[in-house]
Length: 587
Image (cartoon, rainbow, N blue to C red; front, side, top):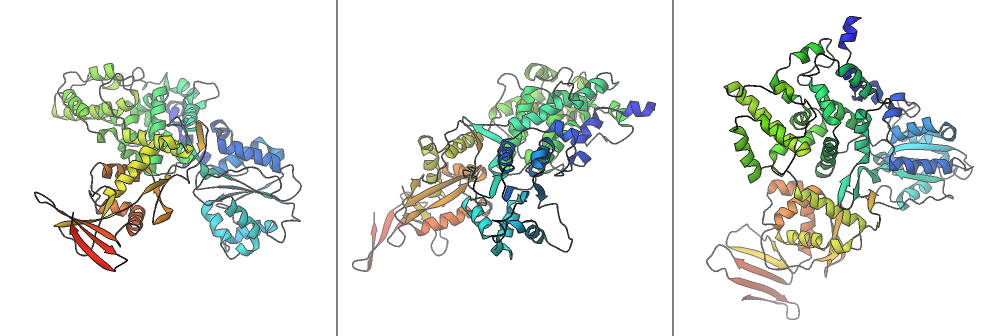
């Protein structure tokens, strides 16, 4: 009995957040007390609730499609609503296309055909069935185009008319006369856009569920009961990390980092993965075996270097092997940012007599956060390694809880992209001219510097004496801009469809501009020449460039310019359609 009491600590409560925990399993008809506590309302839930309440009162058939991608919370929200509104939900059958199968010999498409039978064209008008179907967009697409598709032409028309399978945000106005309704979770994100910045009440609320000093919060109660009187309270990185996560500025920093991962690296973070991530940044797997019966003794004997490596800011960026989220975070490590201010600080820190002064002066840590490593000798060779670990900890920490203006780790290009994304999704033309002009300039410079309103093209063998270009007309086409006058956007695209038209581009050509392509094109605009790797990663943009080249003047006029000479001469080759002859002249 004494061993159990001795072993019990905050770790056991935190383990409920792990993906391997039984609490992580989603079921449409079950909702545990823990899930009820951890539940955070979302806009998609609000939209689905309204549809369910209205459809539950109708007499005829009702099919509610809860669409999206894997891990976006469809099953969780349906399960929550089933628990919260049992009388309304009892009128519907619930089906999850990803998990339910009646016969192992049948495919998911076969099962869907059976489940949706009463919503087929010939049965729809007389059917009384009500069904809430959680379905991934890929499965929905496969089903309406499958061998059973002919039976569901009305459902297919609904999906097409509502543009459910397209990467567009469409108005989902409720239609009382329609037996089909839908909520597309893919239209919603973990964050919102407001005044050109990103916010996530959802992620922050989940963190608060873990750290709030409330009697309803078992994590906090465990911290109060088990951590404060613990013999390891002065040397436990888990206790330290939990206290750090309670700091408002740290929460905001972690929220911002996760949103950067979504936008820059296009990862999809499910709530399940997010909760597991929060567990991982509190409990370091590298030096602490949380399942060990001797975990407290191991924590008591942890050395200074391993204590530092077990702190949240080092876990965040140093463990890409833990999950796809950590792999993405590794690319955002503040240690990768080098500027003159950071370089000067590194030299100063390495040569300082007392590096702890920097922590006390420039970092707003929770009280006692690094007491474990105070009074460490930093003169011997092995302690030079400790100094280096402290340097990494300081730079990573400064991004979250820095004080003053010691150096800047802001990503201005990312902030610029968010501002452009916000304006594009609102259809704010007045603010978008700079964006369209910048992308146009990058397009024209993709194959190297050329004359004004011209793009270089490659003819025949690659040669070094001349570059060949054609004139091209590119006019910004903003007809495809979304229109949303709300200040805060909860439905939006995280890529921008930038269109241009011209004499030979009457229908216009479109670029799907995500962050990575935006970053590359801004570099090209500023003089960078894309290499083979860049072009392989931006293959759709290369196809766009090829299309653009075909719409230029190359069939009527070409410009030639000498390269690498003291005075580079220019020539023009033009074709006269009237006299069917070419003319070559120096300009």
